[in-house]
Amino acid sequence: WLSWLLANYLSALGYPNMDPGSKFDKYWPASLHVVGKDILRFHAVYWPAFLMAADLPLPRRVFAHGWWTIDGEKMSKSVGNVIDPLDLVGKYGVDVTRFFLMADVPFGSDGDFSHERMLYRVNANLSNGLGNLCQRVIT
Image (cartoon, rainbow, N blue to C red):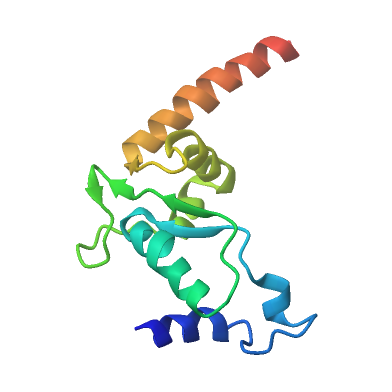
């Protein structure tokens, strides 16, 4: 288990080559280690212990992101309720998709997605609110 983790995380950076200018030297330790909230204990307790035992520097910061739920249910490939971001961009456009994710999915908390919620957020904030403001300022 430990050897698998160390091999997968570190071999991508050319470990054990830690020479100046190597990928390992450039990218390790991570400035930010982003993990799912369900595996935070492992990455905040066990992973640092493994790294310390191997005399390797620890990530500078660990951040656990929330889940993106679909109509209140955790997104899962096995359930089949996965949303492809490229499909969202294709349907709504990149700016609208970014706006929705930034406005409706709080960083670090769970965010719920539905097409109805996305349309509501976009219409209420962008079309009505921002559009109305621009119309009043420009005319």
